Length: 243
Ligand SMILES: *[C@@H]1O[C@H](CO)[C@@H](O)[C@H](O)[C@H]1NC(C)=O
Ligand SMILES: *[C@@H]1O[C@H](CO)[C@@H](O)[C@H](O)[C@H]1NC(C)=O
Image 1: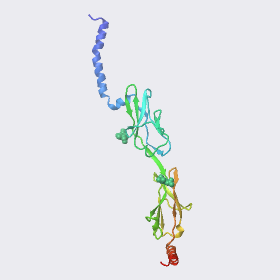
Image 2 (image 1 turned 120 degrees about the vertical axis):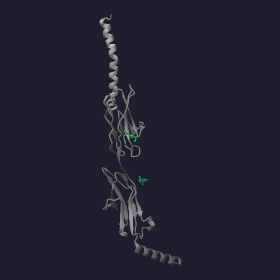
Image 3 (image 1 turned 180 degrees about the horizontal axis):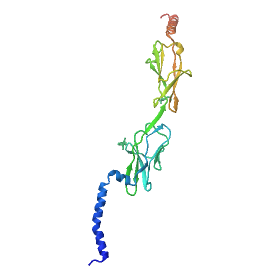
Image 4 (image 1 turned 135 degrees about the vertical axis):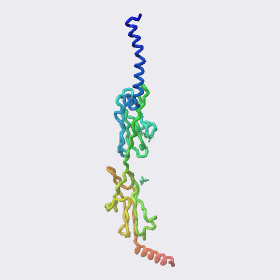
């Protein structure tokens, strides 16, 4: 004969398989999404794609809701980001002291790891839209060489300042502003009066920079040029006895 206590124990034991069965049923019904939501690693802050400026500081933010016992690392296009003086882990965030337009391209992801359970969560991708502006010289685009300037139908100068987004240019002749916003400056039917020192500056958004080398144009003009040739010829003839 069972004592009431033993009976209770047996009933508990016999009920156990059905409880386990229910548990498994719930576990199977529990979709991946539900499980992830129920897990301890849920991002309360995910890194966001953002504007940045080359050479300026920036921060990619990351946080999980249950932060205790969680360690963070970052990926750039799937590769672990190693701490350097320029970019490093600050708490859970990735701090950039000076964003680099060549080195900080691509997709960044935050990786949160629960140290105790080994559970890992990887955030959405985030990238920088890096604004930059880099100085350059004013160069001669047309004609092909300085020797061909005299007699050229048009002279085209190019402002070699480059950037993202595409900058607007401003031209100066001997320090005086000219009209036009293009990267090139066209002088049609150039005359000696177009001679001078040409420089340019460029602007995109908040950034502005000027050319690091200007271009000195010297146009003698056709008539003057013929006159000079004749003079030289006469001189050489006078001096050397032939032309
Ligand atoms: C994030 O970017 C990496 C590298 O560009 C890519 O392989 C991966 O599929 C992206 N992941 C998501 C979730 O978009
Ligand atoms: C001007 O800028 C260009 C492009 O950045 C660079 O290659 C060149 O060395 C610079 N020139 C001077 C005189 O600084």
